[in-house]
Structures are given as C-alpha cells and as structure tokens.
Image (tube, rainbow, N blue to C red):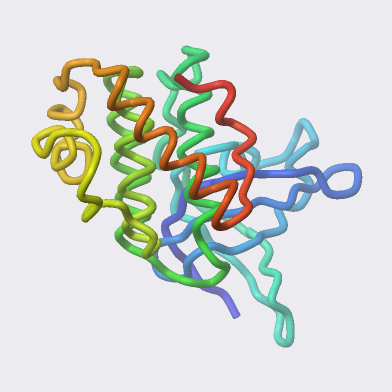
Length: 208
C-alpha cells in the first residue's frame, strides 16, 4: 500500500550502514516510524527529508502485514534554514520535537499538536528565540495531550497565563520577562515529567 501525508521529522537514528529510522509526525496518520533506505550515503536522494524537524510531503510504502513503512519519495517543504544557522534556535527546535514525541503515542493523529509544532517552527525560523517560547509551547502541547495546567488556580497572573496558552506567537514574544513566574512554570514541568509520567527530556539542559 502506498500512502502520502504531510509530516515533520521528530527524530532519527542510524540503521545498519546506510539507512535511517526516522520518526515522522504526520497530519493524518500520527506518529510513524519510517525506514529511509540509503540516505546516509552521499548519493542518498531522500536525505533532506530524513533530517531533524524537516517539514515535508512524504510518500510511504507499507508492505502487507507490516507496520513499518518505507519512505519512497516526497518533497521537502521547509528545512527551516534560519533555525539551523543559530545554535539556540536549533536546540529549541529539537526541544519542541522531543516534547511532541514524548507526549504522542504512535499512530494517534493529533492535528492540534501538528499545527502547534509547525507554527512554532515557522515562528522560530522567522524570528529566533525569545524568553517565553519554550514554556508557551510546552503548556500548549500538554493541553493537547490531555495533561494541561490551564485551569490551575495558583501561579502566574491571568493575563500572562492566558497568553502563554492561547496567544499568537507574536504576543508571547512581547510578554515581559518574569523570572519568578518562569521558575513556577518550570517547577510544574519538572514535577509532571519526572514525577507523574517518568519522562526525561534530553534537550532540556540546552534550552533557556
């Protein structure tokens, strides 16, 4: 069976000498593990499509009786070149992808999380990093995963809280820095990820 879908690469790892296993978060099929054959060779035609946080239009082939598709073609819609030029932006993009990856079961479509990730990457590529981006993204991803803190009574003042959860990215960027509120929110994340769901975010030490 051949099927096509839009998707964003969440992570990749080597397979044998020349292949890659790539986790792609697709719009209609959710998170899928895909074999990219020969992309680690110099002549690998689909290499760009297998790179971290590449947004593409993918074509997959799924053999009957298998749950492990092979990428047979596609088009890279954006590799977010500006992100790749700035180390802080690169780390934040990888953090976005890791948060979505850890909060998303396989083969469970979530158009809300897909749009969140794509919009956050486009914003980051256009404007670079800012103080509240990481926290706003994680709060929204948690909401879409069913673990949100939006109704938490105590904590940051209402205007900040609402903007972090639902404001446009330009509004999030305009929020004044507030270290006390940031520490409170980071504490919520720490207790949730390490205490409730036992998830370690490997990218967290590298982002602000």
